[in-house]
Image (cartoon, rainbow, N blue to C red; front, top):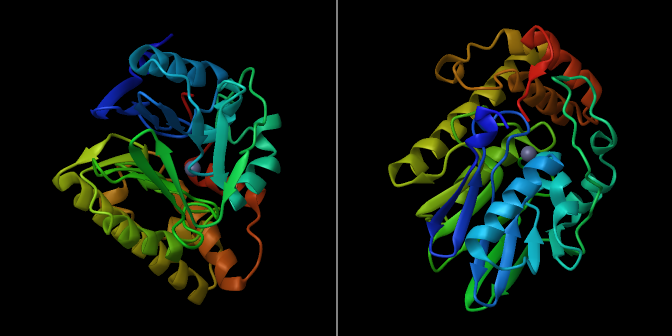
Length: 308
Ligand SMILES: [Zn+2]
């Protein structure tokens, strides 16, 4: 176990509400969590590798002492779902309809392409899909505690996003609709949709946000981070429109972007992936994932660093 792995932390943000935060939140290092009462437990997301998922579930079991009756995946990406198979066999997993289809057809769990270095090894995980799917909204009752699972209404981070809202304590698990202090990623969703989802998230009036990546947010940090997302998505929209007008490729358009206040964020090369999404939507074509990642690697000057 190295220092980075050691620093993953289970934080009880409100009584019975846990967040599992994995610094530094860059590629494949996600956050997860759980809602626990005397009646049971709902787990929110797992982790990318068997080792990391087991570490999360062991820490949660030691702290909260309940077997997870239920789990929800906030979206299809492997950092939030590959560890599903580490959950007890009895756990009922919930996901958005498109999320289930996305994980079913995800090739990366079968072998990670060399877009990252070192190439992640997921360990002993199996593709485990949701048992229950949701279109727009589902309310889960964990004993007396109500947890509202909601879809933003269209593509945002992905096509199958769900948030988990715990209204009595105003805690919002956003999944990857929020990357706190890291470059947001929307290449499998929609730039415009992700921008609209920021306003949608703000309307919950959360006191605590557990983002998909990065530190837990409360107080003034919530509106600050949501505003950063708005500015970043507007930058992508502007750069995409300018790139198309000038006849640039997505990679050329990305290289023309002055990242400014966002230049210091981890995973800055996501500007390339996000512009590929903008271009695909503008031209009404499918996004070519391989081409998009090859461009991101070129922009970065080599494979994307990961510490998963
Ligand atoms: Zn994601």
